[in-house]
Image 1 (cartoon, protein in one colour):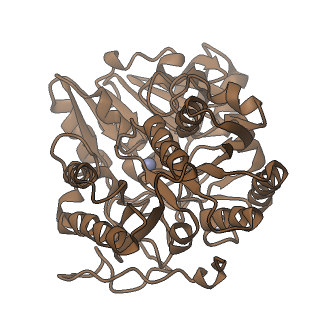
Image 2 (image 1 turned 180 degrees about the horizontal axis):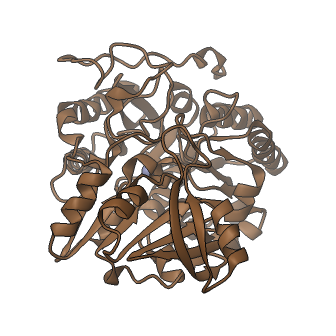
Length: 507
Ligand SMILES: [Zn+2]
C-alpha cells in the first residue's frame, strides 16, 4: 500500500490587500521529503493525523511537499505554480501509488487560477492517470468546496469543530477512509450541495448549542445511522468574492451517489434553516471601549473587521484610536501590524520616547494612522510558540516587535500578521493580559477559549477586510439574489463555477 502525501494550506480573502509570497510560506515552514515527518511529528496538524494513521495501517508513505502560511489576501502566482509543480512532480516520481492524501485549506485565492484547490486535485488526478486511484483530502471547516474538487477526489473530510480543535482527527479520518478504499472495503463517493448564501463567521461556533453545533450534531447522527461514511458542513470563508461560494453540505457514501447527494442536501438545509442565528451583536470601537470602562472585570475587544485569522492584515488602528480618546489611563493592550513603527521603536530603543504614527499603512482604505506619543518599553524578535490549537507546539513570530506605552495603553507593534491562538504573542513580549482591563484580539473564535468568570468579550463592527455585515460589502462577482443581501424565503442553488468546464474527464 503506497500512499503519496502532500499539504498546501492557505486561507484567502478577496477584500484583503495582503499577498502571500514564497518567503511567507518559508517563514511558517516549507518542507519536502522526509523533512515533512520531522516537521509534523507530535503536532496537531491534519498531516500529523494522516501520517500517524497511514503508518499504523502499514502503508509505505511518500511524503512529497508541505507548505503553510497565515491567512491573507491571495497567493502570488509564482509561488502557487511552484508549489503545484512540487506536488505533481513529486507524485509523478512516486508512481505507481495506490492512493494520495492531500491536506488543503480549501479557501485559497490566487491571482490567476480561480479554483486553486480544484486545479491541484485535477493536476494530481492527471498524474495518476486513472480515476479509480483513491484521493483523500482534508479541508478546513471554512473551505470553499468546488464541484471540481468533489468530482476529482473520492474522499473529502472537513474539520468538525470551530474553534478548530479536531484538525489532527480530520487528517486521521480522511486517511483511514483512504486506507479502507485502497483495501477495497469501501467505494467512497463524495457529493456536495451548495446554496447561494454566506453567513457571518463570528456566529459559527460549534460550542454549546450554537447553530453550527446543531448542524454538527445532526451530521454525527447521520454518520452513526450508517447513511453516510462521513458528513461535513462548510459555512464557508465568506469574504471570497466568487460566484460559486456558498454554504455547503458534503457527504461521502459507500458507492451510492444519490444517497450522498440526499445527505449533503439535508445538512445544507440544516445550515440554511439557521441562517438568521449567525449574526451576533457588535459595537463600534467607541461603544466597546465605553462599555469596557464601566464593566466589572476584564473585556476582550474583538477587532473582527481586522481579523488576521480571516485574512485581514492586522493593521487597523480603529480600536487604538478609541482607547486614546476614551480610555487613555485604563490598563489595556492592543496588537497592530506596522513594520515601520516597529523599526522606528527599535531605533529609539528601550526607555526612549517618540511620536509615532501607528497603523493603516498596509491598508489605508478605511483609517488614518493614529498619532501617539509613547515610550518604548520592550523590543524583541516576536518569537512565540503556540500552546494549543491546530498549531500547538509550532513556533511563529510577529517579526521585529516593540511595545510602546502611552498612559495605560500598551501597543504591541509587530512586523508580520499572525494567526492568533490565545495570548501567546502578548505573553512572549511580557504582556500579561490578566493585568489588562481591555485586551484587543484580531481573531474570530479562539478568543472564546480565554473567556471565563470576570472576562467578557465585545466584537466590533465597522469597515475592514473581514466586515461582519456581509450584506454591506460591495461584491463584484456574487450573483443576486443571495443571502444575506436579499430577503430570500427560499434558497437558491449557488451558481456553478466559471471554471467547471476545465474539469478533467474521468475514464
Ligand atoms: Zn477555519
